[in-house]
Structure formats: structure tokens, C-alpha cells
Image 1 (cartoon, protein in one colour):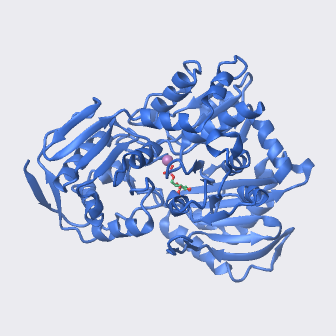
Image 2 (cartoon, helix red, strand yellow):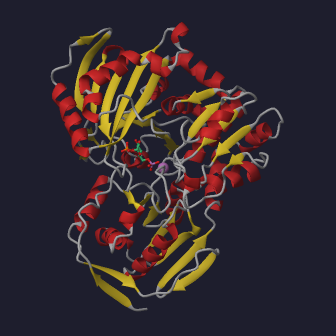
Image 3 (cartoon, protein in one colour):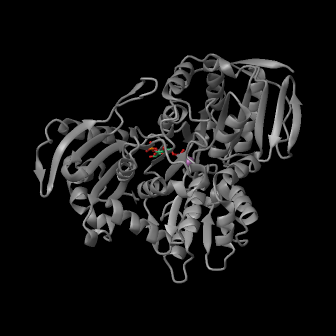
Length: 544
Ligand code: VG1
Ligand code: CO
């Protein structure tokens, strides 16, 4: 097979963000853009030569084209074998599982997660390492450094590969295996949960659920697991076909973007349980009848009830949450007498804690939860965990959560996002807040007294690596918190995220609206940062 060495020039914007390299499709289609980045992965990861690579994506526009290009570059870089999901489909957690199960040296996931798809939408590429998890910062920094120097990439002049039929083929020296994207993952789920109890619940005639796949990657997974293996009625999975443009919507599982599901769950004759996942299948939203479970609460409830699930029957070694995630899980860890770690935003920071056996469960406020069964967050896993809990406890979602609040108090929580703001203005706002960090501790604002403030930094307890500048946080007496951070996943300008949290233990105050319960903090967030003045927006674009 003829190998071409193509001259190229570096692009200077290939720094991976919170979760891989994410840009608009048109940007990815610039000459040599994708090729450069893939070559830099191979150049900075010599361990991939002669090894196996897992490859798949969420089915968005440009997925198939990108797979063909990556196969040709992989061949030219002497990769021994590439395992590809049929039709180019593999969810993020399924890639993580396949890497681990097959002992592959790494994997490439083509996805921009919950960002919109289609010719005018976004595309993304994430590299996962041999433990199945997202590349740690040492690796993404090496890829970025290579991308600033690259002069050539290698690509084979090989024919188009049929990726639509399961089986083995050979491309020059390289083996290609096309696999069913669902089977191994579904088997893994079956090994973790009590499928008999869940099947009995779903077939009892007294329990109804809906899962919204949002025309993204989880459709085939949810159909196989919920409708085939667990016997839920056909139609339980809404919007099941993966579409290249996700039906023109954002595949983002929240009350705004999963509108039909939200209307159903808050309407008359609502089902008992509702759930949704995102573009690449790593996020989850959990709903009960007329009830929204905040992701931070969900993590805490799963931790508190883990022993009801076969895989976690012996208890948890420890838990972890990202810094902006609410402290609800900390309270559970304390009562269980297990450690609770606080990491920067992004799944890559959980990898060492999981590999080192320090934690079993972890999660983020951004609708991400998972355990040591893979090294990614896992949307369907969280949904099945909830289903297993409901079957084991014989209670509704809202009963389970309200009972949790009575035991641990409620951590009222919300995130306010200000999207597509001018990057310079966003930086100026962060600078303004940063300069307030030393001044504000000790000051009182109404009933709120600031105890401490800092720019969050993290030292990984396993390998000692240090990550700084991970969010500006104000800690109040009584465990309230206010955090400002700029997103690392957007593709248009900057997105400011403001995270708000307050702990409430008075039994008669546990059923308030979150925005109402957090109103004094919301006001203070504006006062400290002058969000309206800096961004020109008098309210957030998205509230979760
Ligand atoms: C966001 C979330 C973060 C999550 C990341 C990737 O990052 O806040 O918690 O890990 O998305 O999720 P940021 O930097 O925009 O705040 V996914 O489902 O896009 O892989
Ligand atoms: Co995602």
C-alpha cells in the first residue's frame, strides 16, 4: 500500500479543552486540520505503534468521513489493528469498555458531546488512553505541543473501507474489525445490575418509563437493554435513531433540550420514571413523575444506596466529585466513613483515583455519573442504577430523593450559564472576580458571610501532577458556595458558568424552588462579578 508523506503547516488552535478538541464542522474540514491532529496523537503516543486502537463516534455529521481518514493515517503509522463500531457508532462509555476489555492501547471517540451537529454544527475528537479513560493533561499537552510543530503527516493511499458490516478485513498490513457497537456494553450492564428485579418491575404493568435518546448515540443501546433484554414495551425509547444532525436539536439532556420528555414527565398521566442521555451517551438526566433530580443529588443518592446494586453490594471504597459539583455526596461519604475527593472539572481527573482503587463512584454536576466499571462517565449506567434502586426499594423517584434530604439535608444547587460572550469581556470578568478573592473573606452580605475564597488548584494524590486555575470559588459559613468558571467545551466565544449552592437542614424548608432558595446567592454573584455590566446579559441563557 502506498504511503504518502504530506507537507502541512501547524494550526495553533488545537489545544484540547475539557473533553477533547471541539470545533465547528467547517473548521475541522479545513485542509489538513483533522489529519494534523490525528498525526499528532500518533507522534506523541509511540505506544500505539503495533497495537490495537478502538474507533467510533456518536454518528454526527462528518463521523463517517473522519473514520475513513483516521483509518488511512493509522495504517500509515503502523497501527496493528483498528476496531471500529458498525456504521461508525460507539458511545463514549462503550469505547472505554472496549479499550479495557480488549487490552487496546487507546481509543478515538468522534463527538462534540451535547453540542449540536450537522454541517453548521460542531465536531470533536477525543483521545482515550489504555486505561479506557480520557487522556490526562500530560498527554493532551504533548499532543498540543506536537500540533504546534507539525510539518508532515503520513497517510495511506488505501481504498474506502466498508464499516457497515460486522467482521474482519485487512487494509494493507493493518487488521480492521467491525464490531456490533452494543453487545459488549449491554453484557457489561447485565453483569452489574439486578436485571431480574428490573425486568419484573418493567413488566409488572404498574410501572412505566421513557428514555429519550435525543436522536443521538444511545438509541441502539437503550433499545437493546431496555426494550429487548429488560422487556420494556416498544416505544419506551423516544427518538431512538441516531441522526447526523440529531434532528436539528441539541442532544443535551436537560429540561430545555429534552422538551417532550419534560412535558410528559410534568404532565397529567406522567410515567413513573424518565431519563435522557446526550450526543455521545456519557451524560444522564433523571426524572420522576413531576420531579427533577439534580445531578449532584443523583450522585449522592446512588452513593447512599449503592449496596442495593449487585456490583456494589460490598460497599464503596470512596467517592469523588468535581469541584463545582454540590457537596451532597460529601455528606454521604462522611456518614459511610469513606473518603471523598474533590477534583477539577472534566472526567480525566477521576482516572488515577479509579485506577488506584481509591474510589468506586464519581460524578459531576453537569449530568455525569459513573463508577469503576469503565473510565468515562456513563449515561445509561446511571439510568439503570436508578431503575435498580427503584426496583429494590419499591419507592418512587421523589420518595427516594425526599427521604435522602430528610437524612442528609438538601443541597440546593443551580448552575447559570452565560453563553457566547465575547472572550475578552469574559476574561475581564474573571479578572475582576479574581481580584476580589483576597478582599472578600470575612465580609458579610446579608445572612451570607464569606469564610474563604481561592482560585482552585488540584494536586493529584496518585501521581502528584498539579492543575491550577480551575475555578474561582467563594466559600461561606454554613457550607454555601459560589463558583465562577469559564467553559472549556464551547466553540463560539466564551461561556461563563456560575455555580450556586446552599445547604438546608430544616425539615419544613426542604421543598422550595431552587432558584428561590438560592436567590440571595444569585444576587451576590451578580454583585461580585457585575455579570450584566460585563456581558450585556441581564439573565443567564441556560439554568440547570
Ligand atoms: C462541560 C462540563 C464538564 C464535563 C464536560 C464534558 O465542561 O461542565 O463537567 O466534564 O463538559 O462533558 P465545560 O468545560 O464546558 O464546563 V461531555 O458530555 O461534553 O464529554
Ligand atoms: Co457527552
